[in-house]
Length: 248
Image 1 (tube, rainbow, N blue to C red):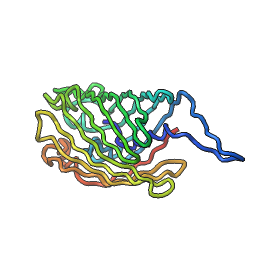
Image 2 (image 1 turned 180 degrees about the vertical axis):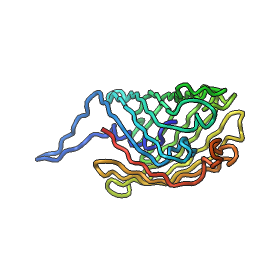
Image 3 (image 1 turned 60 degrees about the vertical axis):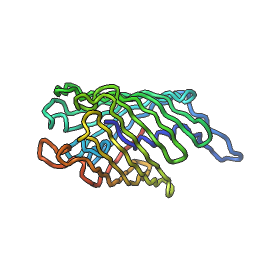
C-alpha cells in the first residue's frame, strides 16, 4: 500500500528555484522530469497497519512528471509479509499510479488520480489487488484527501466502495526540518469490524545525503481483527517508526 505521506514532499516539484547573482532570476524546470527513490524503514506501516509484521522493509520506486501540465505517473515497490501470513503467496507489493496536480489559486493545490496496488501471485480467496481513485485539496502545508476503492479492498470480501479519509499537515519548523501530522479513517464496506482510525506524529529531516524520518504511529483498530496470523501480535499497535530515504 502506497507510501504515505513521505509522498507529500513531491509537491516541491511545482516550486521554481531562485538564484541570486548580481540580480535575481528564475530557474525554469524542464518540461519532463524523472526521479528515483529508495528507502529502508523499520516497519512498513500503511494507514497505520504494519505490512511487515512489525519488521523492517526495503522500498523503492520511480516517478515521472510533466511540469507544464502537472501530469504524473509512477511505480513503487516494497517488501511485505502480510500476504504470506494470510495464507497466500508473494512477498512484494507493487503500486502503479497516475494523476494530475496543480494550483487552483495561490496556496490552494489539487491532486487527482488513480492508484493500483498489485500483489503478484497473492492467491488469496479474495484477491488482494486493489484499485482506488483519489482526490486531494491542499492549503499551504495542510491537506485533505479521500481515496475510494473501485474494487474489493486488500482482500476483504464484498468490500468494493470502501473509503479512506486522510487529513494532515507538514510544517517546516526549521531549515530542512518538517513536522508531519496525520489522522485518517478507513471504512471497509460491509466489513465494519475492520474499520478503524489511525494517526501519526513525526518529523522529517533533510541531511543532504539522505532524508531521515521518525514518527509515532498508532490506530484504534480491533486487536483481534488486525492480529498477525503468524504470531498473534497486534499490527496496529502504537509504535515508533524510523526511515532513511534518498531521492535521485
